View 1 (cartoon, rainbow, N blue to C red):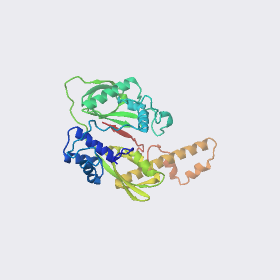
View 2 (view 1 turned 120 degrees about the vertical axis):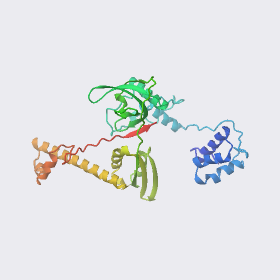
View 3 (view 1 turned 45 degrees about the horizontal axis):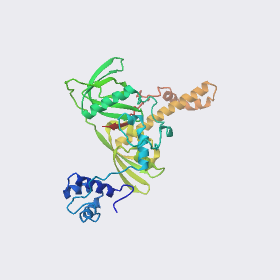
View 4 (view 1 turned 90 degrees about the horizontal axis):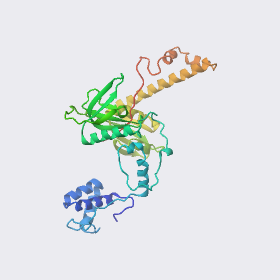
Length: 359
């Protein structure tokens, strides 16, 4: 049997072969490529012989078929419910994607069913008409590789008039904002979409010079403990990254993740969120960066504790704790400084953009 209600790899592979034959492809070598790309390594020993000998009675021995229409994959009720839920997201609506035949389908979930607590509250106005208009102009320019022009106010309060070529969009989960990556604009290569004003297609003939800077990548290797669903949570959290996963033993997995080097601060924070469930084994530079980040967080926590206890003492609370903290004399020097700087005056704050890219 080649049919599976779960849409097995064999079913999808045979469907692709039949589609290729209907399109006029009869070369056995080319059809073998479909098997290699869509099925398993040993599938070449099963699928093509079963089709050529007409065991499955779908393809003739001369690699033609009596079928007139390509196989289709009808959606399950669960898939339709998920699509309906996604279609209600205002961020998805920005892309102008149509979801037909879902009018009578109940969504699998709605925004009332969950709460995101680890992002800023001043996200982009995704349902604002002007925001939607400008988003779609930028999206069209990216798809057509054309130029746009717009205005924006810089940090000094001055209006800037910009002409550039948008290359791609980035979405920051933590900031809940879209950013535009541009080329041909010397001042800035990345701009928050919400800051753009009066965006329009550039109708002139003058071309901008310059290309987007090539992105550099690095790899981090992580050992995961098979506890508290840590492997599943980790793979879900890093689902959009290129990675390799290996089971070391019953209690541990190893994952190698390839990530943009510019996203390294984000990667560190996301790794730390798994606590003792994971261990970064290499590279050593990444391990050192995680340790440094933990030390910064610890310094900020100590400052907060000291400030709170001093406040309690001033308001009539116990002063014994305050005195104990200053017993060694040096403690006060640590707690009296700017909470965002270390003893050498170095800024401890870290700007972490959490990004997803859409081309």
